[in-house]
Length: 216
Image (cartoon, rainbow, N blue to C red):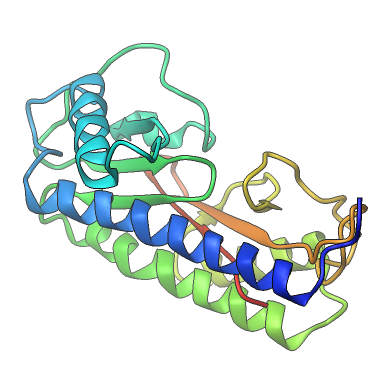
């Protein structure tokens, strides 16, 4: 099989951007329609979001199945489904994941600490992109350490798990391997970053999953 050329790389980058756009459209429309609401169960919300994803994507696209975690279930590692269903409370933090490369957090109530999490998650993600762009030798270990320090400064604890995986897969890099590299089959390594921030007392958590370098 021939190594991918520049055109192949551009097509792959555009596909990653489009996948994120579609997932974002589903998430924000679900919020706008009030599908994630107190009194509904996590499974009920998953079914509602799944139906919405099919509605917005059309018959030719098979959208990923959503995973919804709320309250204490947000403390579970990203990607792990709760063993039991749970009703959403009025002051809950809720995480909605749509596939391996997209997850967002929302807050149902007005608690200031929980709402601050909504601002801090994308801010820490922005710091990750800056670190990636600034350091060609950046490794997964160094990225995690930098983000843990940034999260701690904001009053959160970053989960002690790898925060980057190859986009579209569940493959995590060796912690000491530079992130700026090509894969064994010749593609530029494109990463998805998952931030899992908890309170120091592990009361609740938020997750933010987004491609780190979809276009470069």
